[in-house]
Amino acid sequence: MNKRESSLDAAGKFSKSTSLISTAIDQGGAVRLGEELDVLAVDRWLKTQLEDLIGQPKVTQYSGGASNWTYRLEYPDQDLILRRPPTGTKAAGAHDMAREYHIQKQLKSAYPIVPTMVALCLDHSVIGCDFYVMHRIIGIIPRATLPRDLNFTATRVRELCLNVLDQLIALHQVDYRKAGLENLGKGAGYCKRQIEGWDARYEKSVTWNVPSYRKVRAWLKANTPDDSKTCIIHNDWRFDNVVLCVQQPTRVIGVLDWEMATLGDPLMDLGTMLAYWVEPDDNYLFRASRRQPTHLPGMLTRQEVIYYYQQKTGVTTENWLFYEVFGLFRLAVIIQQIYYRYYHKQTRNPGFKHFWLMGHALHRRCLRLIRQSEKG
Image (spheres, rainbow, N blue to C red):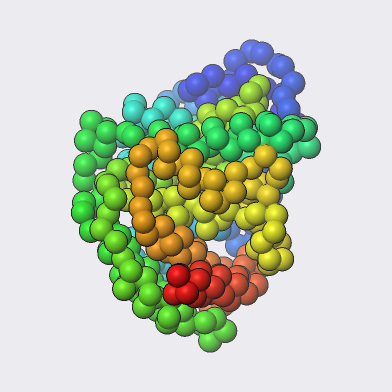
């Protein structure tokens, strides 16, 4: 393990310290077959953007994401992250590298735990697509299983949970006008536009082996509320999109993956987050596909999360079920879009082979919630 990693300063450059770091720090792995990066081309371009960049990078890839491809470029004196879109069929408006770059660059002053941007490349002659580079935030990413080194008690798990929720709440309090992000979204009517948009995306990505979601989609359209308010929303808030401090591992020092951030209803952000929130008594398929440690003793339940958020923000609704069903349907669409690329051999990642099964599980969960609401 690289002993220099703990000593990067805020700009991503190495200092002279050689302190040992925790094995819990998130690391990249081997680059996946078919997702190789033209390292020489990237290096040549980067050196036109960073005059003091020296040497050649060691390149690894992060395997956690199923959307954009993320690589670590480890130079002798700088630690960088490159984000680029996947190959194959993409939903309209998705994987917009320029948009994701500019959101983070504008938001940084108002929300400091956003990564520091380095450069954006719109020249397809470099690697055939748009991409951007940012400084790596060194820390712990809480994925499906917390690193053993942390040895968290239930009290520490609860502290982590509340800190992650508090950062979501802090984001929702940012003045988007002062941040220069007033053009990030279309304003009022966000909930209605989201239902129409995700409905259309599902239609375009259906394969023979997944449900139509006909009843779920009709129910969402019939029960769409007015927006509760308008604010900056992350739109993919999960534990594995936050970075924790190595010295204080319940403290959030970074928030990643701003691809889908926009101006919208904060309760939609909350519903989206809870679609990933797997509890210990959820069914086997949800527990087996869990991507974050929400099952641990000390974690808030989904109902406790809703109560905590509403108490801290004052944003309430009598129609919470809509946001919960929407979050599940939206997740089903995202999973199906990824599976569609695999089904049509536009990606070779074997991890996507059984994504269609989750489509069925999410469908059953949506229908169960809708039936419960119909019974009163």
